[in-house]
Each structure stands twice: as structure tokens, then as C-alpha cells.
Image 1: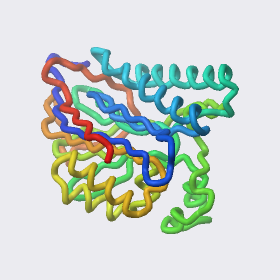
Image 2: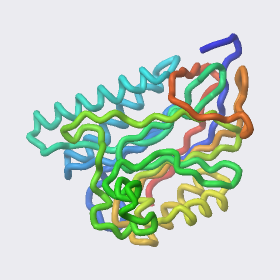
Image 3: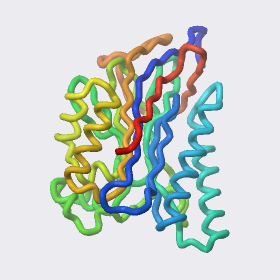
Image 4: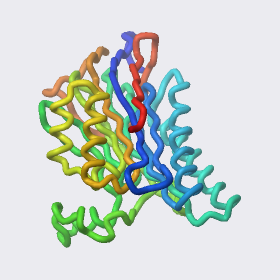
Amino acid sequence: MSGTQSLVVRVNSAALTHLGRVRTINEDAVMAGFPVFVVADGMGGHYAGDVASAIAAEEMGRLTELETVDLPAVQMRLDAARKRILDLEAAEAVREPGTTVSGVVIVDQGGVPHWLVLNLGDSRTYRLSNGRLEQLSVDHSEAEEMVAAGKLLRDQVRLYPRRNVLTKALGAGVFDNPDYRLIPVVESDRILVCTDGLTSEVGDPEIAACLLENPDPGSAAEALLRAAMASGGRDNISIIVLDAWEVLGARAATPDNAATGLADGSAHMDDDARGAVATPGAH
């Protein structure tokens, strides 16, 4: 990292994953340990999907063992996960196992702590800042491409019959580059990372309301789960709610100086740079 001052980011988080009301297998996986907060939604059926997502979460979890985390380290772990998933396909004769991956890794860019947002597939990462909910990730899906081309309205996506067809994934017999986005961490930022088991059941306005009405990350995650279950719970549901409550560094970001860009930073993790991670049980 640049400079002599240690980067300190204190976070509170809660993570959960739930089978839902319909599925018999949970193909989701969650990794929530400072500085890595990601979800993965597997595809390919039993064994293929749940193992693929577990591999992605395990490989991303290896970042918690490093003293510094940067974009090359993140890419290395995703590449390792991809290779293991492809090896799984060859060894088990499973048809194109794969998984989505979405979330944030806390890194240091020029002495300023940043969210490194990463995404492959249609799991999502949001930020709630100053009362406004913003989707930071872009869905890699046929439905999103239809919206971008003006062939489908945003409010029609949830009814589109091919909304779950992905155009990018980790594994699935292809090599896809993730999307990366770099955003300064601002005190009071709230990050939501979730699989489409939440977003296919609950719209953004209700998601925002749950996040605003529940100051505690655990309560917010549980409220979102209840909303998804009440709307049908037709898929596995995984949720991480992450709050930045103290941000110190050479130049702490504020809402006025926050900027975005491509990622090329690292995070120094000393004894004060740690996340308090709670993982409520599934209900």
C-alpha cells in the first residue's frame, strides 16, 4: 500500500443462505469474511451446481489468508475456481457445471479503502448510500441484454420466460472475464450482495425499504429473506448485508470525493482492519 498509515476499515456484516420453499437442493454458497463478501449461485443440477458454487466460495475465501489483497490476487482465485470446476466436469461427466459470483472485496487504492465490486452472472451487488439504493453490478443475462437493446422494459424482466438464461458465468464450459468496478468506501455505506432468489421475488423498492428500516445487518438480512419467502421463495436465497461504520486511511473517502474506476489496489489487513461477521442460521 502507499504511504505509512495503516488502512483501517471496520465493518459489521450478516450472511445467510436458505433453501427456499420449492427447491430440494441448495446450490448457493456464501463467503463472508473480511475482506471478502461474495455469493455464488451454482448451475448444472445436483452435485454440479452446489459443488461449483462451493468451489467458488472456497477459493475466494483463500483471500482472507493474505496480508494484502489486490486485483491480481482476486483474479488468481477466480481462475483457480474455474479450473477446478472444469476439472469437475471432466472427472464426473457432468454437463457444464458453473456458478455465478458477485460481491465485494475491500482493497486499498492510493491509501483510500475501496469496494472492489466483481460480478459474473446474475447475482447482484447493491450499495445503499444517503438513502439511495444503487445496483453496482450488471446482470449477465439474456433479459438484461434485451433491456439494453430496448426490446424489453425493465418492469417486464421478472415475467420474461428466459430471464434466468445467463450470458456469463464462472465455468459452464466457457472462459468469461468478470466485471470489476472500484468505488471508494464511505462511512455509513451499506452493501447488499444477493443471489437471484431474492431479486426474482422482491423488487428494488422493497429491497431498499428493508435495508432502510432495519439498522442492524442481521435484521436487514432476515427481513429480506422473509420478503422473498412471502413472495414465493421459488429459488435458493442467499444474502449478505455489510455496513462500513469506520473508515480510516491516508485519505478517507467522503460522498463528495467518491469516484469510480477500474481496480488496481491492495488491502493491508492489520489487527485493527477486521470485519465482525455474523452468520444467522437459515429459517
